[in-house]
Image 1 (tube, helix red, strand yellow):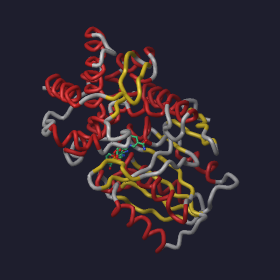
Image 2: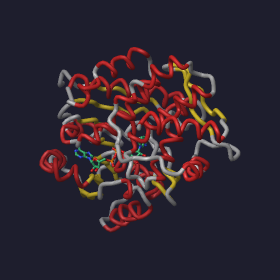
Image 3: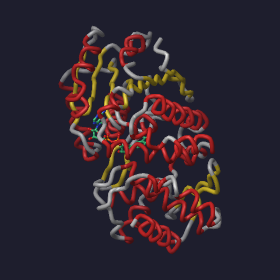
Length: 367
Ligand SMILES: NC(=O)c1ccc[n+]([C@@H]2O[C@H](COP(=O)([O-])OP(=O)(O)OC[C@H]3O[C@@H](n4cnc5c(N)ncnc54)[C@H](O)[C@@H]3O)[C@@H](O)[C@H]2O)c1
């Protein structure tokens, strides 16, 4: 066993599944797909960019499996997470005669994973799925926990399912080819875990911030491992977001609105960090944070390089997207706020003028 390889198990109501983390660990898939009960026919949805950068690595490993294999190359970008994107995958599965005994494997970022998970959950009333995340964002967050989905009518992730994978392999070899702006986006979700987990992890991320960008292997392995461990522990207590799991949405009510109103030109992780900044201001406004702590907590998200061209243009349009958010109840916008690292308040109702304040302060602090 590779000494840098880590393995853990995510526990869910119906089933536990393994997550493997390490560099060049994709070949561990042989053991996983040869487990009893794992389906024989592999339909592989792979992000087009990932395929062109890693074609040899991927095909060499899969050709050794002696299974029926079809590679479906997915057009990169958030716009693939749509009805059209879904339809094309499902049509190809039918055309290539993939039946219920199919294991759908996603190889790519959060877009590939969310769309593939959704496709697997509805194809023939549900086939098996496994994820091989290739972006930092997908490794620390989206590949774990079974949330699938597509965007619809310009509402982010408004259609989807909870559908747990059979296994997840996080091979950090893929991350070596990730463009800088995508690392930045992954750091966005990582900063969320810094706030959710504990002071030790928060300080580790703060101290090793530059080493994340230079993809130092030990740092990369640790931040992925710790994030997955934390997310896994939350999922095992609340798989379907009845309570505790809501904390994972820190910053997301703002973030989804920021993303939607820029028609997804803003990357998800960047939007999350902006959303966390807004949530910090809102927490201060609601008396959960002192001014001293607000200033202290703003330091980490403000270390991230955010797209200078981004401007939060239209307050009314942001509100409209917020009213469409899944976290709302009875037509009121609900927020996840924090009073300290690891201390979260969920379902907090706030009025529109407080939201306005948080957005104004976010624009100000980013300018
Ligand atoms: N399901 C969840 O729990 C969850 C959680 C967080 C985010 N998400 C979703 O994840 C999506 C964002 O995911 P993302 O940031 O991974 O974006 P992405 O999947 O769009 O990938 C970003 C870009 O990186 C490229 N890429 C991927 N891997 C690469 C590699 N190894 N080398 C070079 N290029 C590579 C892709 O082609 C794409 O251009 C959003 O839709 C968001 O809603 C889901």
